[in-house]
Length: 134
Picture 1 (tube, one colour):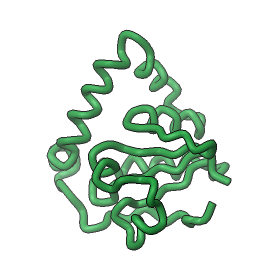
Picture 2 (cartoon, one colour; picture 1 turned 45 degrees about the vertical axis):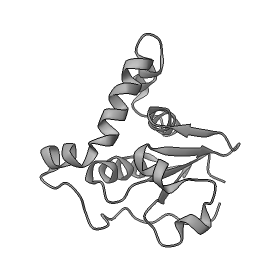
Picture 3 (spheres, rainbow, N blue to C red; picture 1 turned 120 degrees about the vertical axis):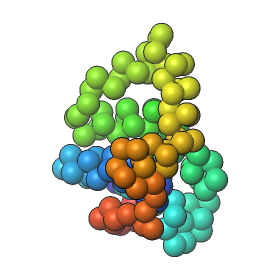
Picture 4 (cartoon, helix red, strand yellow; picture 1 turned 90 degrees about the horizontal axis):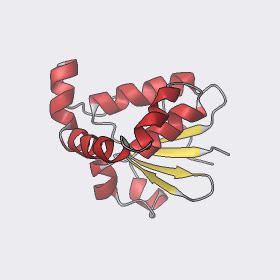
């Protein structure tokens, strides 16, 4: 059983880069990656609103607790034992400004992708598929 399921946008180049990096470090298979643009997503995951998930990263812990935005990233990197410094982004006084910064990033992620990767969107960038069976 996976400890965290991450619902990510495979059309966002920066999102795909992050998911590939997480997958590479997830040697114990603690994280399940699920593409919100995948065929049958809504039927397989009715508890996740696709529109909201496209606006903000969603993660579901094995205990059923929903994580959003930076909380997903921080928890995921903690699970794979990397980027432990990210935990500081969830503490006062950084939590609120970092949440605002994340929402700006999420809203304009395709523009940031263009600036940083040279492409604003991909027609299904490839992250090696995880089994959707938990």
